[in-house]
Length: 238
Image 1 (cartoon, rainbow, N blue to C red):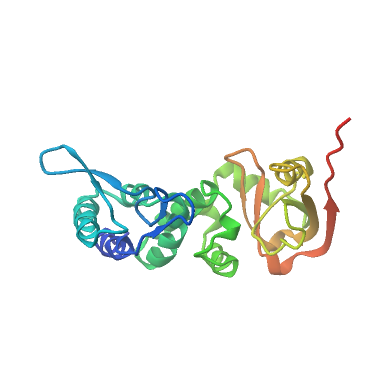
Image 2 (cartoon, rainbow, N blue to C red):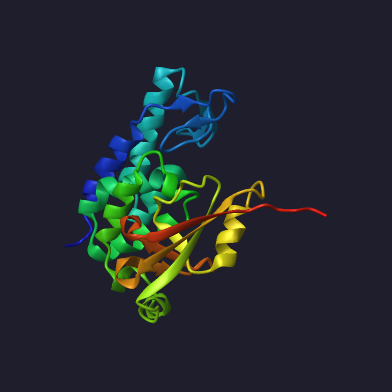
């Protein structure tokens, strides 16, 4: 099937109508699918900037929705629509438009949104089980580059994988790596006192191998890992 751009636009406008929520401490920060600061700067019909308080003013919110709806309806492609959506909300939008995407587009956006989202394994709007189901619908020949597919195909039938985390029970996740040093970097990323998880998985239970960010990321079915071990990382300063 071809990508159904008109249907995607309709769902994007529905997504746009999400109720904005203010940050509990910094009131200029807000949580919304298409904006993350309030008031929202937008251009009026004369080209001058206006500032819309979409949290406290219902008329401003309606104007914001109307203007953004016009932008969405005039979008040339799916990438343009995704670029309007605030990053943490793109993966959920992918989930709700999966049935509107061609196989090629689904694999393209699944990979690119995943690798460009901070902490995709802990997305509040898409559970790890839902993320796993999305990846199970992927096509290995479309979601990976030729070099990534070659790397996956040349892995042994059973491999050791690692994951750098800050909570030692955080093994129910899709993102692992076969590079211990890479996992160690993630474990020490913020406070130098994280954990490196180690597990074993069969190659048949690996869904994809991504290396566009040089992270040697292995997407796995986390239900199939075994021999799980946990190493506490302690950064000793002399």
